[in-house]
Image (cartoon, rainbow, N blue to C red):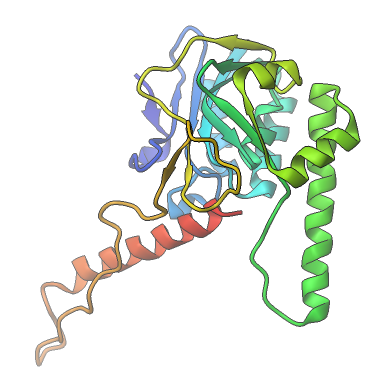
Length: 259
């Protein structure tokens, strides 16, 4: 059975798991890409997963992710490209945004017949004066340039066409992904698993893609904790504090998922 990386708890998109004992060791990337302290998948978790797997000749990476932090995704991509194993990527639900970059690391890319790939321009949240905002814009332009090159290298597609697809936010069905080089082969449906992305984040989401609210069960903002007694203590202090911290982590997840 797959093991949770570092005993992380499963959540909205089931998290990241590794089955190092399978005939082909398998990593399941079913989540947002972002900081692990907020319950997301980051590059260090991939290092841990690859260490668990060891010197296997083949590795399977299975993806159902709306994307997230493009720089963490680039690191994961490079970890996979540099690994000695033959990497097979299987897109089980959706490889959207930064997750589609990770998918391009596969020596072979398979896509479920009911899955999708989405590519678009990078985005961020910025605040500051005009010079700081110009630097943010420059950073986005460079990230887009690198993403385009990654897609061109893997698909063999025309650079200007891929730029147009990014600007339009383009969704590819399994057949379209294979036709345009984003996958090598189509495989059977993954039962009980649908493409899932944060609601309201993307512009052109097809009807077949499920859109979930960017809140997480049990992680709503907690009410103010009870006033302490004369000794400054209350039995509810610690649970309320933990609940509040969980709410902060949930909010961070929703922001990262929008990148």
